[in-house]
Image (cartoon, rainbow, N blue to C red; front, side):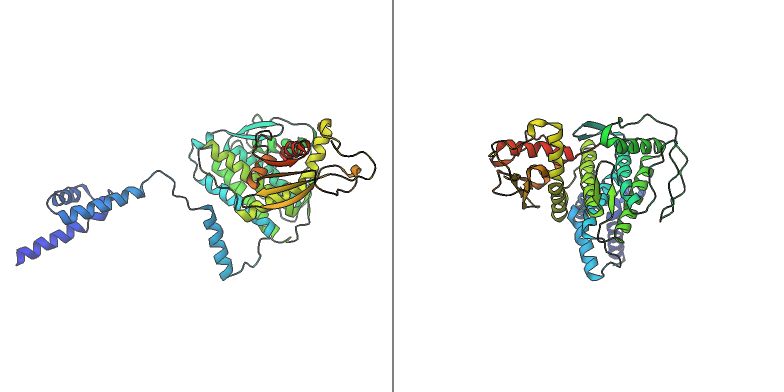
Length: 400
């Protein structure tokens, strides 16, 4: 009887080691004894096989990321239980989501991946930047929003420039200046000169920092911007980008779209999956692109005279401007009438001269100059010249 109890106790003791053994955390002496036991005990051997298989799943190199919609679902559930004291305006939500998604990607990057080079196309060419430099570019342009909200400018002042005026939020302690570095963004003239100059100064300033330090700087600024936006829920504050002035609500959606596009650029460079914006956020991006499209068409007429005028329209005074029906498919589905001609043609009216149908995400990618307007799948009907003008005008909304 005593011998039976002893064997049973020994069996239970060895069986209790199976979990640690399957994870490789069992001391060598006990592991050897357990493995001898497994050769003679079918019950323990079967359980050991199951545990070892389960342990293998815990050590997979493949990412186990949750769907991007999970974060929004959790936030919605939490806010339903306890509303935020200072809610983020609806126009600030796309920026909040896209910056969080990009931050999640960057947190997963290893030292070698931070050295990969991402290609960032725009209508004037293609820039090649490492992920930390992409963050520098995002931070520099986000700085226009910071200035409009009274936050510190993340970009160091140009040499010889007057000291900045005192702001509502005092600037943080300055970091030790890094040694000068060659600019990674080639200088651009014209309307984008200020944007590229700011980006170049910030990249030189952060050249001596580690990538994670750059990420923390950028992430802190995104948090500060969202908190400040909650204090201006109407979003009417003008934001001057140097080449255009947008109300704060549109500027935040614009920054969300650029954050998504460049996040996808980085993800492509490091061979990492990247999800599109949530449908309700993509809809805001599409609406912004449609509102800005008349500006792009005006720029196209100025740059390419062949797109000026109204081909096929009857001559005469007072005919009014032409319109195009734009139908967007996909999660951001909708329909808009886009004026094609300038104010000199008179108020737009009458039947649309053409209709075009395309996916909402593809529309945004085209506006970021990440698609070829001549190869984009588009459903079309009517004036082909008008449709081509719209397709070629959209990439002009992109910038360095």
